[in-house]
Image 1: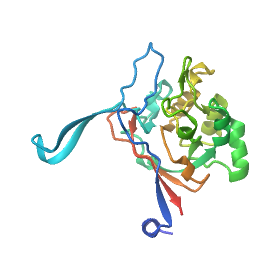
Image 2: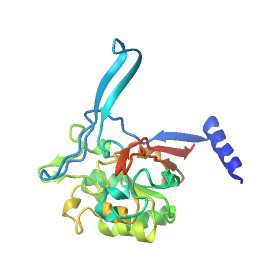
Image 3: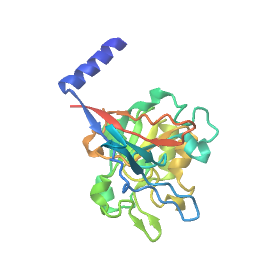
Image 4: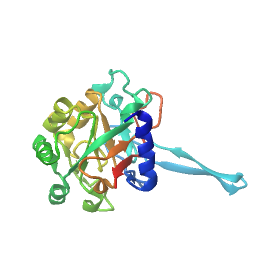
Length: 261
C-alpha cells in the first residue's frame, strides 16, 4: 500500500469510527503533583496560571493566561539530555529529536493485580518475558507502558504516595530496564506514576536505573499518564510530541493513542 493510501485509510478510519483516539493525558492544574526530590536538591515548580484578560477591560474580546511550569510537570516527556548518562548524546533534547520518534506502537503490560497487592511492585525481566509469551515479542522501536491503574490504587489526597522515607510507587528494576534497552531496543518506557523509576529507586543499585539506562541509550520516558486501561496489550499507536523547547530536557505534552475499534 502506497503512503497516500495508508494516510487515506487512516483518515477514513478516524472518520468512520474504525479507529478511536484515546487521550492519555492528565489535566494540568495548580494542584497537580510534581515529583519531590530529597530536600538537598532544587525542587520542580508546580503548574501556575495567571489570567491576563477574559473579555474585560484588560482585553475586551479575548481570554488568555500566562503560565509557569517546569519541563517535568503533569503528563510529560523525558528526553535523553534530562539525565547525566544522556548529556553527551547527539539529538538528545526535545528540539533536536527526530520527530518520527513521536509516533510509535506501544506494548501495554498490565500489572494492575500486582500493584493492587503491593504498591511497591517492581517490574522485572521475567514479567516482560511472561507478557511476551502471551502477546509476542516486544518490537524494536516501540514504547513499553506499565499499566497500574494508579489513580484507583493510591489515595486521592496523596497521589505521589509519599511516606516518611519518600515516594512509593511501581517501576522497573535495573535488569528489566537493560532488557528493554539492550535486548528489545524499545523507544522508551511509560507509566501512570509521577516518575518512570520506582518510588524507592534512589536506593536501587544503581540508583534510578530507568533514567540511567534509558536516557543513556538515547531512549525516552513518559509519565503521569491516564487511561492506560483503555489500551489493548498491542495494536495501539502513540502520538507523543513534546514542545520544541531550545535544549529542553523534557516537556508537558498531550499524549494520544490511536486504537482499533
